[in-house]
Every structure is written in structure tokens, then in C-alpha cells.
View 1 (cartoon, helix red, strand yellow):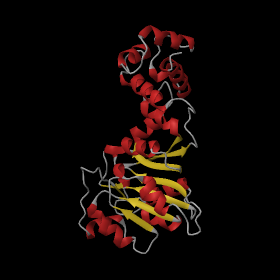
View 2 (tube, one colour):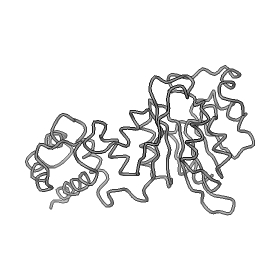
View 3 (cartoon, helix red, strand yellow):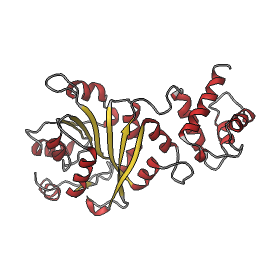
View 4 (cartoon, helix red, strand yellow):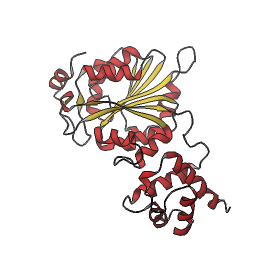
Length: 290
């Protein structure tokens, strides 16, 4: 396959700002990503936003099967040309509108002998829509073993943040609910065409077999997390009481937090995912009338 710079020139491709396109051209970064994913012939790899296929070709050389989902129809002829004859299926569709189970796993998730592939997701995500894509993949509950994303460095820091830090927020909690995250390495602007105005990072998510919080009501849990971080300057008691999401008043929230060992003026960013889980369970008791 020709290098990305030559393909851009040959096909007169102009990166779309509207789609947040920054084509990865650094082969060393590609190698590091694929090594981190540990891709082998037992894997079905789902790549979101393959662009010009700079990473897709190398994925296909290692994986048992590759499905690449690309929104930009201008790039489909390029992908078809350079990936012809390889074990790659290209889907020209918005990932947010793809039913992954029906459109990918059911038709492509099994080897010829009927045994299932291990599912892995690898993607250089468009920065303007990173969080919706990641959350769709996690919430859809696809049976993936791991997911590796190239994202804006700031987002990577938020994904992997721990309680008490400035970056810690609703995204940090949601990511840990579904996975164990790790910020692997930073990628600098010169690795892309065109160069983005920010540094990037590669994050690996090791998916949990079941959500971290076990039997806690997921709807209540995420309402709680959303309310807790929706008004970061407010105390947790005030943020929850003012949210209108729960059948409790300010005094009831205060009593619950004190019973959990927290000061009544604690803020949401101080709570671990375990604390959010326990708080959600206590709120759930009120829904049950106990």
C-alpha cells in the first residue's frame, strides 16, 4: 500500500473539517497501537473511521477478520482499491447508526468452523464526536474483549482520571463502570495530516464481563453521576437535591451521605465509583418505598 501522503496527493483528498479528519501517517504509532491491542488471527477487529486505510491494512494482516466503518463516502473507493483481496469488510455508514450486533457480529463474528472470534475495537476517533461513540459502544454491550482509541489528550486524561483530580468527572466514572482504562502513550501533531492543534493519546479499555457495580440499578446510577457532576461548584447534597431526578429532599441526601461517612459539604469529584454505587443503592431503597 502506498503511504498516506502519496494517496492524499493521488486522489486529491482534502481532509474534512466537518468530520474532524486527521489522517494518521506515522507507521511507528500504528505499530504501537496494534501491539497494544495484541491482534491475532483469532480476532474480529472493528475499526471505526479507517480514513485512508493506513492502519486498516496492518490490522488485516494480523486479524482473522476486519470490519471497517467509514462515514465519508469519498474515501470508500480508496479503501476498496487498496484493501482489495484482504479479509476486510467496509461499511459506509455512521457508527452511531450501526447495529453492531446485527450488522457486524452476526454476519462476521464467527470463523468458518463456527467458533466465535474475539472482538476488539481499534479506532482513531474524530475528536468532535469521541464521547458519543465510546459511550454507544460501551452501552450497546457488545461482547468485546478490549477497545483501543486514539483521542484528544484532554479526553484521555478525563477517561482515566481518579477521584479528587480536576479531570475526574462523569466520563471517568462511566468508563470505569464498563471497563478498566489505561492511558498508554501520547501522540504528537506531526503524526497526522493535517496536523491537529492538540496532542493526542492512545487509551486502552479492558472490558468487564459485567458492570463494575453489579446489581445496582443502571438508570439510577447514571442519573446520580450526571447530577453529581452537572453542577460541579455545588456540594453534592445541593447538586442532587436541585436536580429534580430523585424522590428525596436535601435533608434526606444529607443524612445518607453522613451515614456513608462523608461530610455534608462533600462534592461529587471526591466520590469513588464504589461510593457512587453505594449511594445509588441507598437511593434505590427510596424508590422501593423502604
